[in-house]
Length: 235
Ligand SMILES: C[S@@+](CC[C@H](N)C(=O)[O-])C[C@H]1O[C@@H](n2cnc3c(N)ncnc32)[C@H](O)[C@@H]1O
Image (cartoon, rainbow, N blue to C red; front, side, top):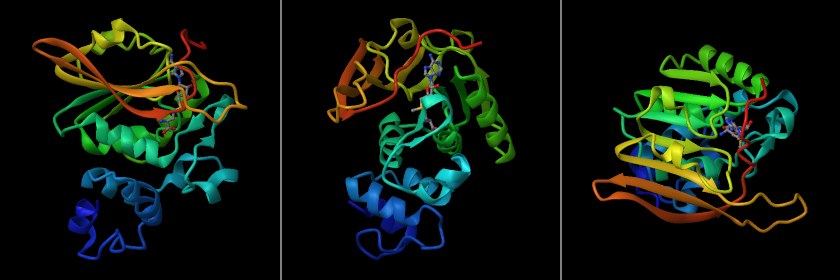
């Protein structure tokens, strides 16, 4: 599994060469590389980016845990492995413009911003939108445009996009959103009903759409459990 990590961090096997001083080193080694994520850009960024900067004070000690954590208004910052997997599935390149729906804390946004030319990110909760925009500005991500609003049907004003990522789950992804994919574009999104808190089964699928000359293809990736993509703005 670990060719990417070996190239980045030295020749030791199984991620043992990740420099311990990087804030996310153990998280990357134990939760992400160990589960088969091999994109060395993703591994490098997530080892370096301090996830504690994206969570509220009472969750800082848990920031590198193998779990989602609560944010404002009953929302979550996703499990690190899921963030890594979604980023790898997106096949992002340096020249891409990316639309992200569901900014949340801005953690996933920051990772995307390190990979691509421009990120347009939309968040419907005005508090999260304001806080993440300020956080990303302070961290120096000048290639991110934060939008407070409803991204249920995408953000058509700036379309088309090379890549689209949804970080919350609609029952079905809006066809209007998929229409905003550029030729050769890829969208990654969780899709499916949201379960009650008492259930531990995942009944959502992470799916990937590709726009080709023949049309739009879709494939199932992994089972996931996301908060719902809610239609309509809070403002
Ligand atoms: C799982 S959280 C995203 C976590 C984020 N990736 C992070 O790193 O913190 C999903 C986010 O989607 C937002 N959301 C839900 N429906 C939305 C919509 N229609 N438009 C924009 N954002 C939406 C929620 O408010 C929530 O912040």
